[in-house]
Image (tube, rainbow, N blue to C red; front, side, top):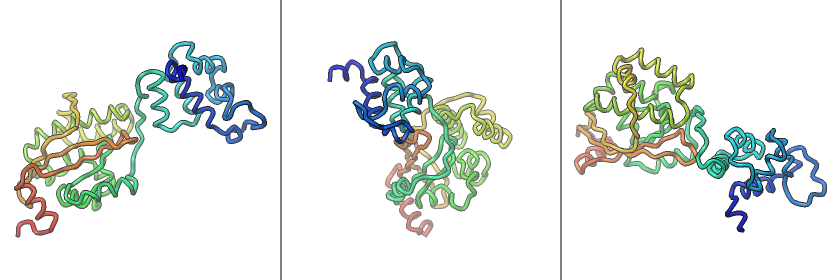
Length: 278
């Protein structure tokens, strides 16, 4: 137990190593003194020296590099949460984000959205593509199902759709906030500098002088919470919003809207009941 406390990285590596089946990796299982892979087998899979790997398990040799940790994570076939834990133990920080495009959400995540029938909610990617929504969001914001996948991007809608732009009260302030939050989200998810990000920014800059101006300001804000005011066919609506990161999916964010006042709650209820303006 004492060695686990004084050398948590080594303890974690030993634990992961001893859980693996040698035969699954093409190693002879035969008679082994301990279960799992041998140290030299892990070192071979990670393309590092057996001596260096042994030192890591023994708490010697100093802090490993990010490259070494990535090789070991691949050699041990760690999941992304396990790889992040390895980084925290070895370097005291999570690994740099790896951006991966997202096409949709899991059925379980969709059920979370659907479980909030009175709260409009969407799930967006770091590139601000809407990939999940509930019925309330369709009625409050827009019917994403009727849009092509590339048309569900919040920035394209905000800067390229005059009808939706007109719905937003204080559009200039909202636009500045959205662009700054988009920049922060994209960087956090590791998408900044990617070809996809460069293409989207170039497209939006050509589409809208407003976006181009705001993007050049280089502002950054956290997209945590705030109030969205809408000129809606159901009547003026003020909606509080809160943003949540999806656990295990740092590239996804859930935005949940709730009425800011009792009057807004009544207008939203009529909207969801299909009785607005009656």
